[in-house]
Amino acid sequence: MERLKEALKRISEIDYAAMRQTQKRLDNLTKPQGSLGRLEELAKQVAAVTRNLTPTLKNKVIFTLAADHGVADEGISAYPKEVTAQMVYNFLRGGAAINVLARHALARVVVVDMGVAEKIKNQKSKIKNFRDKKINFGTKNMTEGPAMTKEEALRSIEAGIEVFEDEFKKGIDIAGTGDMGIGNTAAASAIIAAITGSLVEDVTGRGTGIDDKSLVKKQEIIKKALSVNKPNPNDAIDVLSKVGGFEIGGLCGIILAAAAEKIPVVLDGFISGAAALLAYQLKPKAKEYMIASHCSAEKGHKIVLEYLGLKPLLNLDLRLGEGTGAALAMGIVEASVKILTQMATFQSASVSKKIER
Image 1 (cartoon, rainbow, N blue to C red):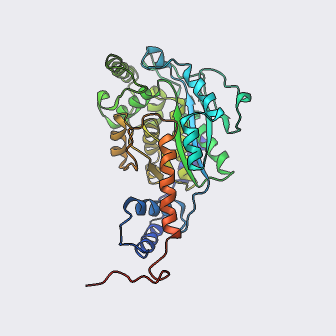
Image 2: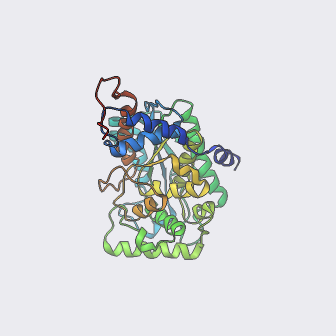
Image 3: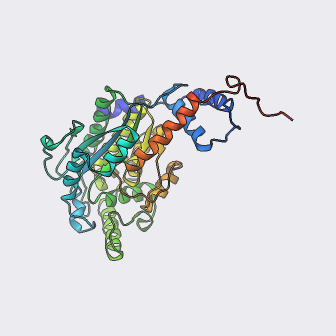
C-alpha cells in the first residue's frame, strides 16, 4: 500500500505554463497557425507533461502485461485458456504483432507475467525483457464471488508501479500499455459498467470474435458477476478486486507510475481503457498524462474515452490488444515533438509572416 500511496502523492498537475510557451513557439513556426491540428495539441501536452520545452522521445517502452481469468471457464472466449501462456512465449520469441509493431516504432517491449495460469519458463526466451510479477495463477471466477482479494488487487497495482520504476532507471521518455489474457474483455466490461454506470450490453463486445449466441451469454455472465459482487463504483480497489484482472491492476500501476515520473503514457485499447478508469479514480490528475492511441472496435471503448474526455489518435478497427495501438501511435506523438523542436521559425527561415489586416 505504501508504494501506491507514494506514487499517488507524486502525481501533480501538468505544467500549463510550459504548454502556453509551447503554443507561442508553434505559432511562430513556418506554417499557418494551428494548421498541424492534433500534432500541435500533442506537442503541447508532451511539453507540459515532461516540463520540457524541447522534449525528445527516444526511449520508448511498451509494457505488455499478461494474466488469466477464472471467468474464462464459463466459455466466453473463442480461444482456450492456455492461449494466454502460449502468447506470452510468442511475445518472448518476438513473433507477435506487438513485437513487429514495436520494432517498427523503435520501442522495446517489456513482458510481465501478472497472473498467467501456468509458470512461465523464461529460459525459452530470446530476449531479456521478461518480468515475473505473478500475483496468483489466474483470478477466481467472478460469477461466484470476488475475482481476487483486496490485498491481491493492491499488489497487482503496486507490481505495475514497481515494473515501471525498474524500467525507468534504464530510461523511458514515453510509455505504452498493452495486455494479454483470455477472458479479460469480460473483466474490462464489468469494470467499465461498474464505474461509468453504463448498461452491460453497451460495453460488452465480441472480444476474440465470439458469435451472437456467445455474446448474449457473455453479457449475462457479466451481469451475474456485477450482481453477485456489487462493486462500489466510487472505490477503484473494490471494483478491481471484485470484477477485475491482475494485468488490469498492473496496467493501472503502470499509468500511475508514469504520471508520477512525469512521463506521457500512450494507452492501447479496451483493456488499457479499463485500467485508465481505475487510475483516474485513484488520482484524477493522472488523466492529464494519458494519450489515447486509438478507438477500439470493442464497443465499450468509446464510452471509456468519452468518460475520460480523451480523443483517440487513430481509428483502425483494432481489437487485438498487446499494445499494438500504442506502438502505432507512438510514432505520431514523436512526430509532433519533432515538429516542435526541429521545424524552422519564420525568423530563422527568413519567411514572411501572415499579413495583418
